[in-house]
Length: 525
Image 1 (spheres, rainbow, N blue to C red):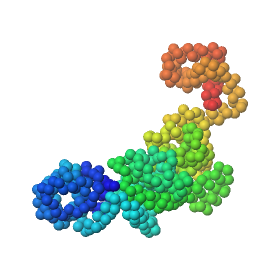
Image 2: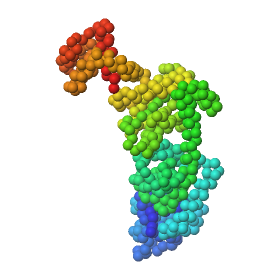
Image 3: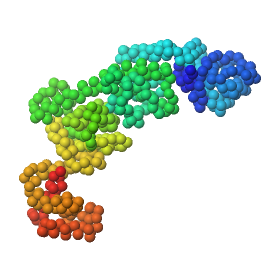
Image 4: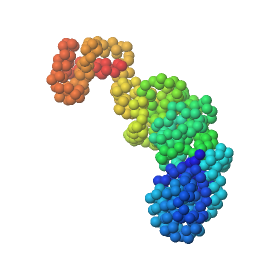
């Protein structure tokens, strides 16, 4: 039996009470609820342990000294809290409030309009843990939520009402960790980054700083999202709070599902349109865009997100594995065009229509920096991000998708430090595409095959050394600096290269051919 003062303050008419002193005592345990309208101030054997008292303090005749003495006496006797109904005596003086703070005696102020019955019956039932009372109260709260929903109140309205009932910050996230509604500026970002892998729907889970309820239509189906309640004080939920969250879960699930379906319905025609472009059927793509009234004016670039490592758990959808990506994108756009595309996530960001090529590049770079910043705490090592080149017309957008796909064929090291734009690595991509041709492979092998064989056998870097030497304009000092080696080491390597190749051309077409072969060799994969 029993509950904390803080829990009691959220039940029945106590919701109207205002804490005015003694906050450190909110963890005091309440086992009894009673009315205090007279007291023998020198009676020391009065059993008031773990009592929450309702009083008007009219018996003190507004005497501050008597009120201070009463606070001391109640504290010595183990009283849990005192609720003073205002309006019958003068406001409590600072000396009384200071004493309550000093003794950690929670002191509440209750409006005169609240009847004692509105507090006594609910509190007594709650303290005694009467299941019938809890069920009735939770049912009444659900009716409030249902009424709001039937009156057209959306997810944000329900979350705000639930926050007022629980007197805590509340947020609803979908299964990807995307924030769909929040009662205030608290956005549950830390919780979202550490959502559990599995949780039974509607059953509250208590974390160190939050209460969490999975939102789902059936216990045997994947969850649709999460109800998160901010609990910085780390308190356990009361039976009534548990029942309230469980009752609210069904309605929140319905509203969250409606919003998710609306988002997916918005994005799906754009995905179908892009599929037609990928198939080369521009005419059908244009007809679809016209029939669906798709606004293509802001679409000029494609961004792909690819898992750095294949997932062992193939049963987990890509969007659930990409929670960090989804959150980063939704932090930029409230209604983004994102969908799965050949095992990757494809994002078509909105770029201001009419932007010049330079303006589009600048806008894209800014978006990519924001995405990367959003992955600072989690996700950077798990995803590779590639951006295609901007196109002039939405009809050419699939070309940007292909550009992004070609960027993802580069070595993992090239994509490890953040998003990579096609324009920044276009030569490397082209070299790799040329190097993949059989005739090019044979020519590269005839030119630098001996160096590559030596590198494999001796774990050396002769191919990279010679390529860097040519890239540096055959400057020994600059090449050594770029390679991070001593100039004498560079000279030794160049001598070894000349020994293997017979000679190293330093100008004209022969030098260009060798330099090109080195580039192709490095990009041969």
